Every structure is written in C-alpha cells, then in structure tokens.
Image (tube, rainbow, N blue to C red; front, side, top):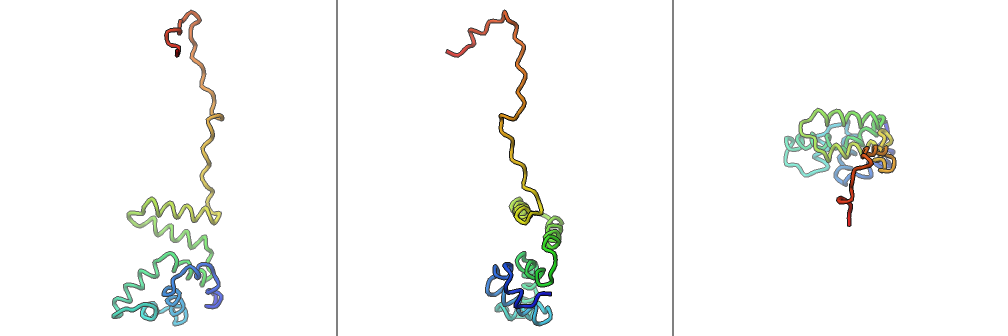
Length: 142
C-alpha cells in the first residue's frame, strides 16, 4: 500500500478537490471509516446524510482511482472493473461509453479505430458495356 505521502504525489490525487483530498486523507488514516471521513471533509447534519454521501463519494471515478493507487492495484484491472460495473447498470450513455473508450485508448489498452480509407484506394467500378453503335450525344453536357 502507498503511504499518504506517496499518494499525495500521484496525479490522481492531485485532480481531487480540497474536500475530496481531506476525505481520502481521513478515510485512509482512520481505518477506512467512510462516515467519519465524510463528516470531517463535508458539513453533514447527521450520520445518515454522511452515510448516503459516502456511498456516492466511494462510487466517483476520481475517488475509485485514488484508492486503487493507494492499494497499488493495476490501473487496467481497476478500469476493467469500472467498465464491468458500468455495463451492468441500466442507461449508460453514449458520452460515458465514449469517455471509457477515450480513457482506454489514452492508456494504450485499446487501439484507436482505423481511419477510413481514401476513395483512391477503393477498387474501380467496372465500366458498363455500351454497344459501339449506341448514341449518347443527346445526353452529353453542353
């Protein structure tokens, strides 16, 4: 496991908001008590609100990736787990799917789609056999 000091140096941790950073610091240092971490980082009126908020926070992509770094998980495996979870949910949007694809391509886990071939590389269509005595003069452009 990465120490908090090592975790703070990661790019994933740097992308968090100040409140999310405090949540992670408290969550890791208090033995993973999410309710206590939420109450420390956010202004919650009771434990019930903090509990609901902790579920949402622990489901955020940024938080998941930081905690995966803390546990020294393989990033690709963490990503595949997120993708698996998202695919099981109803209503995944095209934008979410595009974001997953872009993230996978950026990390080299997925090859980008091949570009369309230019028209010059398409095989030429065979010309129609027109009888030699067929008069096309009336159809020619003027």
